[in-house]
Image 1 (cartoon, helix red, strand yellow):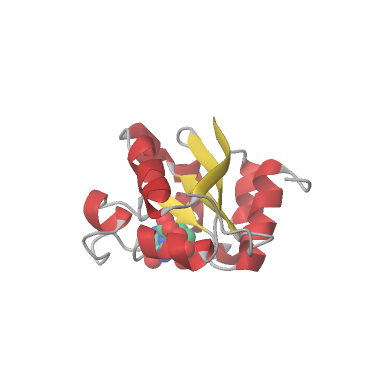
Image 2: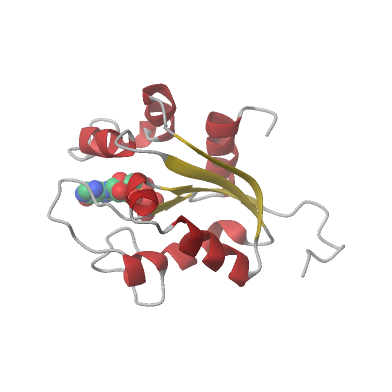
Amino acid sequence: MSEPSTVPTPDRTLVIVKPDGVARGLTGEVLRRVEAKGYRVVRLEMRRATPDELARHYAEHEGKPFYQPLVDFMLSGPVVLAVVEGHGVVPGFRSLAGATDPTAAAPGTIRGDLGRDWGLKVQQNIVHGSDSAESAARETAIWFGADA
Ligand code: IDP
């Protein structure tokens, strides 16, 4: 099913399958849930993040105790970057992802079904999803360039 023609510019969000999700072979499962919900993947790329991209992406967390473990974790292996489109997709993907802490995330969500506490300094919680339309635009420009 495609977007109704009355929606001229569908919303977009930036989804990242984090290194734990990629390493555990969950990329397909994450994308399956995105597509099964009815959203459309419009850009998709697997590669390693750079320190510069992560510094920009996580700028709001700089100085917090989990910041450096988070950056180190995100550099530890390849990530899958996806631009996902659909009306309401920003909060919609956050609902699919579930709460930040996988222990607290509700069953039925990606983090609730597939994540757990590994006893590390950083919550390895499988996915990232933008928290607002503004964040989505900012993050998409960081990872895919200004004209993405
Ligand atoms: P979000 O990914 O659910 O939007 P944010 O608050 O933006 O959550 O945090 C970014 C990432 O930093 C989280 O996804 C998680 O991997 C990590 N993180 C956030 N808070 C903590 C914490 O209190 N301890 C350890 N890691 C955390």
